[in-house]
Amino acid sequence: MTYAYFKGQFVPLDQARVSIQNNTFQYGTGIFEGIRAYWNPDERQLYVFRLAEHYVRLLRNCRVLKLTIGKDVKELSEITLELLRRNRPETDTYIRPIAYVDSDGIGPKFVGYPSGLAMYTLPLGDYINVSSGIKVGLSSWRRIHDNAIPARCKVTGGYVNSALAKTEALEHGYDEAIFLTEAGFISEGSAENIFLVRDGRLITPGLSEDILEGITRDTVIELAREELGIETIERPIGRTELYVADEAFLCGTGAQ
Image 1 (cartoon, one colour):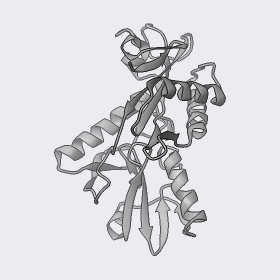
Image 2 (tube, one colour; image 1 turned 30 degrees about the vertical axis):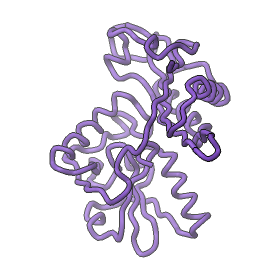
Image 3 (cartoon, helix red, strand yellow; image 1 turned 60 degrees about the horizontal axis):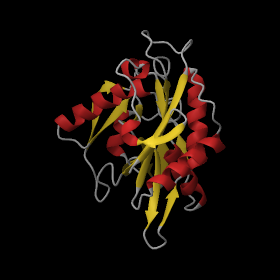
Image 4 (cartoon, helix red, strand yellow; image 1 turned 120 degrees about the vertical axis):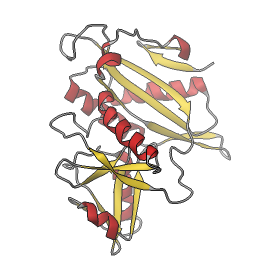
């Protein structure tokens, strides 16, 4: 049996349900995280990648949407580990916690409604094919601006923006889309941060370019600096710089 965490307890996954009247279902008024755990078959052990950092980000982003879930980083981590123990996966696993408006009230708002917390897991291999290069195209859709829907937060409703760009890319024969900001600079992929390689250095859009504050992005910057001695420059990137870069790559929890 597969379990989920829902309304303060562990329940069978098929019992973790919200009403079709639920506010977050209707208006996208939730914050979620994507966390990976990697199965080591030799040690028969599951290793969760940067668990605490994901929950620091979740709680920080909940403040933006005025969601109050009543859990701290330690408690959220303990719930996650207990859920994994109950589900006993023996493969690479994706963990999806979501903070949401736990009300059937009509009207897109955050005040006056209680907040809820749910979590589930599922097996997940490669989100995109990482065995070779992929085809990407610049999207005609622009990245949502921080003054509209904060891209630095994983707001459920904001992923309509990602879905439009990804769908357009697939319909045009690409594997992934690259967003431009409203100002015309490179932002990110539909669900990944982007890095360019030029003259032995890494270049990536800064946090003011309407990007997610990616944990994998932070890991790449740290490993490049400490393990490889490679400098990362965070700055605006013009679209044509993509065409003249030596290399480019995407990264994220799902994309890896």
